[in-house]
Image (cartoon, rainbow, N blue to C red):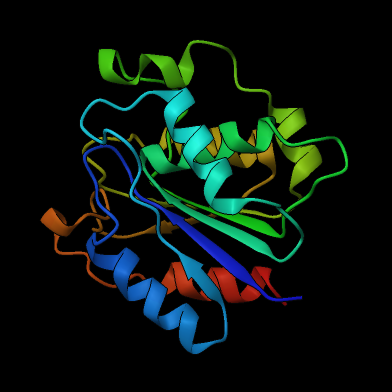
Length: 185
């Protein structure tokens, strides 16, 4: 089975964001088929458009599929997993700087308009890694505990990585690369 990785950027992000491009190259060197889709209307994201776009890109999910999301890309992946058919499962999910509510941001309301279906998500994926920074100015570290508790995610806290973005100088993310390799063994 070919291993496939889908790297999903966040709000206002692009498929060329720093560490996503780096991670794409590194995973391709390891034989993964990597897709980094440009998510629609990234400045004004809507859940239906993002999840439908991801579903179209993935086509048929299977245990050889691994998802790596940054920020808003994380909830997009989780909402996508909620839409899978009963017998569909994926290999694993890496969540970088993920959050469980919209922080009062009107632009993000559609992603959190309904409760997250944690059990349904876990029925489609058994392996989760949550990567957080101890000084993220957007996502408080408490959100890491939510994903650890609700998804049994392996929690990794990085020091001084802020929001893991280009603006923070994060252009490589070895912990995400290592996590994908561990999940895909």
